[in-house]
Image (cartoon, rainbow over the protein chains, first blue to last red):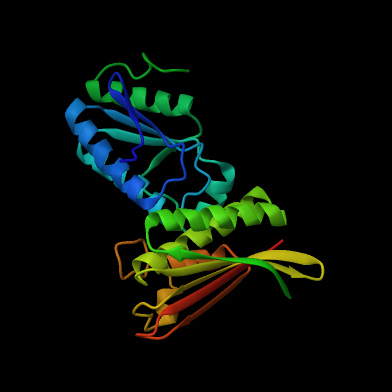
Length: 131
Length: 134
């Protein structure tokens, strides 16, 4: 069965979506990710959508669902790398991804997640920042 | 108006919806749409093809390459023989949904294109036509 790979890096899970995602693939990713968060106790999820040429209401809802489910499982989600044309289209479509944290690129997304994880552990927020 | 080309695609699975996106993308590139305009047309196509699948129980999506003096465009006609829409005006409103979606599909798709038409009767299926011109 076709699947999008999920990489584990320390306390974080990383996903890069590089295919035109059909709906079933998106649903599989949603299930796989929540399972991996629960299995690994990951504290953060980074989803790179820089290769995605279309984010319609279904994919938007999937991103919001993942962020919501991760939150319930005590993990933060950040969606990074949205193409400008996709951002323009999303907003015109009426979708502003409420509840989904976004960052311009992977570097900033990682910095946010490291900050969020450190904050939760009660440590200094800046120790592991990428920037 | 001249129809330069047309292709009818079956919409029976979510892979078919992805195929509709691919054809609309390829033809939008051919007509010379900017990247933003391509993205808008493909996104609108994706919403409508999914509606055909989920609400219409499957159907067809026909992509047309149009030419008029001074301009070319891409049209998509999504047709199903599903339950139809009882109240089209309400279905076009943001936030209205009979399914599990966000209710942005129809109204959102309308905002992304130049021309939008819908024909539907309860029990007799739905046909939605969108066109974007270069």
